[in-house]
Structures are given as structure tokens and as C-alpha cells.
Image 1: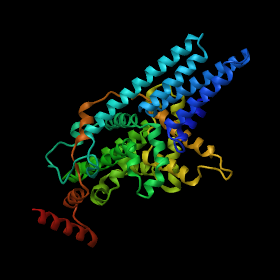
Image 2 (image 1 turned 45 degrees about the horizontal axis):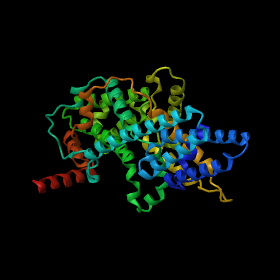
Image 3 (image 1 turned 90 degrees about the vertical axis):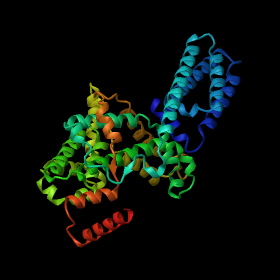
Image 4 (image 1 turned 180 degrees about the vertical axis):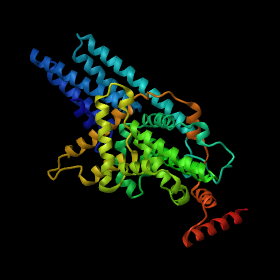
Length: 418
């Protein structure tokens, strides 16, 4: 029943605004009350049964989608429905208690979300800034990641901490908004309608920043021996992320090492023991729709279901692949069947995937937070793409005509700036 209610509430917003749906529930309560309250004992029993079902619906709704009740109109409607339901079973004090507790929990959830919204708005970066300060080229004298944390396991744990913190601020309605506004996004219209997807953008931005941080840490190391050590360190960190079940950080690290300024460092890579990196690349091989990754994700999900500790419950999927899967389901199946009825099978499958994500995001991080390491990961200056290439060419000179032309263009740009 819970799964059905979740699917219904999640998918309904594609067709009707939540406050309109709530109003329809309110109208239904009035109708049922009028029909049954003046009737026989059997009809009064039916009314109590109806009231219990409405309470279950409201309880699920307020717990799973508290943001649907943020405006005064919805809150007023909820209070009126609650009042009617209490009247349906006045002798039963339990109903009153359940409704009172439900309202209290809802207000607490809205208050917590509102506080987070305020913090988020204060620290929100302009869209052009990509959420971080992309300095042209920070001084190479500054400390590097190895001076802050030289243990790959500990760094992987701190990355997992950051991931779970970011994921906890993503809500089912955020994910569903991607579905309901995907077509308008494709057409570059109705941008204002997707303001709620900021949480998704911020999380996606974290992935990009981590990739660029990895590339920066590697490219700015001057000596080849130390650069080789840095590459091997990040390979070990990615492997530890994989073992934990943190696939998002793992993919971000691999993406950073596959960026052209890092990938072109052939002399460095020739000294790297690449066997471990090859295994990681195999797991993240995009062929057959990331078949290897999906097998690993399934294994982590199964481990999570039977786990006794939070450590074994961790599942952090590659977020942009997760979003693409939902988008794909939305695109290949129509919202309605040929007979005009809603294609419930499509929404059932989308809600199943979102429900899995919600289960994973609720896992409490079992690792102790290290503020010093996290501060470095979140605030260390990162190179722009241009600066990465400059550092890369300074470490290992251009090898072919194309690279020589790129290097020449970059130097001209720098001289013009000077």
C-alpha cells in the first residue's frame, strides 16, 4: 500500500498541481461524510474505515513530500481535511493524536527545509561561476592533497561523507520535476519552472569540481616522480570509493584522470602501475549502457538490503547516469495509454528507481568527519581548463603538431593578458 501511495503522489504532479489534488481529497471527504454519517451502523463503520485510509494517505504525503504543504493554501486545506476526519471518528482519541503528531512533524520538516534554503541562497554562486572559483593558475607553492591526507581510504571516506551530505538535500519532487519539465528544458523554455532543481545542479556541480580538483592536483606537480605518486594515489582513492559503494566519487576521479591535460602526460603514465586503473576503467566502461557498472551497482544494492551496519548499507550511484535512466524511461514510454488512461506501469518503474535512491540517501555516514580534509576538498582552488593545459605542457612538452599549435595559442593568450 505504501509503495502504491508513494507512486501515486510522486507521479500525480506530472498531471495536477499538489494543492489541486489536496483540494480534490478535501471534496471527497465532504461527500463521503455527507453520504455515510447519517446512515446505518454499517455505513458509520464504513466512514471510520474511509477516515483511516485518508489518515494513512495524509501521513504518507506529509512525511514523503512535506514541501507540497509549504504554501498557506495547502496548509489550510490540510487542516480542514484533518478536522473533518477527526469528526468522522470522534470517540477515538487516537485519530486526534495521530493528526496532531502528523501536523507537528510536518511543521518541523518544513522549518528544517526552510533553514537549509536560506543557507543555500546565501552561498549560492552565480551560474556563470560553476559553483567554485576557477582561478587561472594558483601558486604551486600551496599545499597539495597529499599534505592534507595521504591515506586513500580516509580520503575515500571523507568523499563519501560529502556525497551523503549533498544527496540528503535531494528530494523525490526534485527528481520528478526533471521528468515533468524535461521537454521544456529540451526546448530551452520555462527555465523559471525548474528553480527547484538547484539541488540537482549543485550535486552535479560537485562531481565536476571533484574531477577538476583531481586534474589540478596532478597537473600542478612539477616533478615527474611526485606526479606519478599523485596519479597512483588517486587510483587508490577511486578503488576505495568503489569498495565503499561510492560510485559517484569514483566516476568523478576517473573522469578527472581522463581529461586531456592529464591523459596526455605519457611519460608520467609510463611510470604508473596501471593494473588497478585498468580494473576501475573496466567497471566504468560505457559500452553496453555501462553494463559492468550496473552489475556492480546491483551488487552494492543487494549488499545494502541485507546489511547489518551502515558501512555496508552505503550505495551512492553515478548521479548523472541515474538521472539519464529516469529521463530515458520518461522518453520511451508515453504518459497515457492509447485508451487515454494514465500509463501507471511507466510511473511505477520511475517511482521504484526514485524510491531506491531515497532509501540509499537516508543511510547515516559511519565515518568520522574530518573538517580539515573536507575543507580542502571543498575550497581548494582548482585550475580552469586553460590553466590545466598550461601546467600539463610545462610538465611535458607538446608531442605533435596539434599540441604545438595549442601550446602556441595558449602562450599568445597569456602574453596578451600580460
